[in-house]
Length: 277
Length: 250
Image (cartoon, rainbow over all chains, first blue to last red; front, side):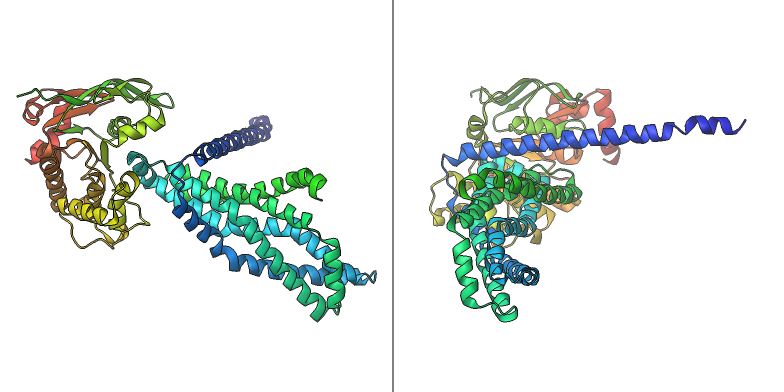
């Protein structure tokens, strides 16, 4: 007799778990749609302000220095080792077909079109995106942004616009730094370690990699630069709930940016390959 | 002698958050040149009221007249023009922590005037003098005490010589001596600059020290508004309950 109520309650457990799972998924979806809408609104607010003064030149240069100059070494190192590793792996595989002459063009095509813009954007996200999100989040929860509004200073123009402009302008520059570093890394491993002649490496690379490939990487980089700074600014600007809220905003900004970079990488490939590929 | 005119009038102000009414028909009038303290307990809606007065929040219903102009429905760009009539001192000062004291006070001057660097420096030092501070130009907000931060906050708020200064809980979290300093600072600012002040506070002692008018806010409504003596003598049961602890100490 005592076992009956236990048996009767057992189907309730998976049903409740399912309900909770569906509710959690629904809330995540609603939050994602709200975030997408909020980011689009912020982008529109910046676009409207971009065509009228003040131009905030000093602040924009300061952000270009922080996002661009400050990230150069990190991006160069990432590019150098990416080129070296990719060349080492490719040389081993191509040796099976006695086609080592294709190592240079294969590595550099992958770098210019895919690896440079994506890895550069991820490096900017880690270094500058997290700092932007934390700085704006702290300003929000300590009422510094409200203070700016009460002083009749537009925080979108003062805080967001310079960061977005700097992101769009500096990400392609950093992408070129990545390209150059990856080329040197690849050239060094190919010629010094894998016994591929310098002439073969340079000639084949020059023959296969054209300006369109470089240009595609730079366009992607500009879009990623916008995404990184826009998402970091949006999350930081709308942070709430003290230091815990700032931490949460930064984490969400990093995750959202990383996902957005890969999604937009695919979309841009689809869009750009017919024109530049 | 001309009758003092209201510089700010709040009429039938209503505001709810997620269906919870916070302000339920506020009526409040601030006379030019006077210090009005809105007194009330935690959660009574004081800060929400102040944020409406400077246009940081939009009301669900009602009017906020600043020198006769209703700011409740003004577009953002127009609001910026009206906000230049205000200076605001935040509860935790809200100084820009990446800037020095000098840069904080100079910020509104650099944004809204075409003054030379020398003129800006003179004005900054003059405003810091008004709040009793010297030789702290190069310090960052993190290097200052709570009371000093509030004083720098006031120096920044009065940099453009506004007509109205708003203080959000100016004495919260301060020791009694620093509270007295801040009270003197508010009285001094009124005397030296002839500004109209709106102070949001739950510090009863400080309110009676600095106020020309006290408005008691309870459960989203102004229950009483008058000079400090009138408020002290009031028979309003909620006000008596609110004042009882302080009166017993006195």
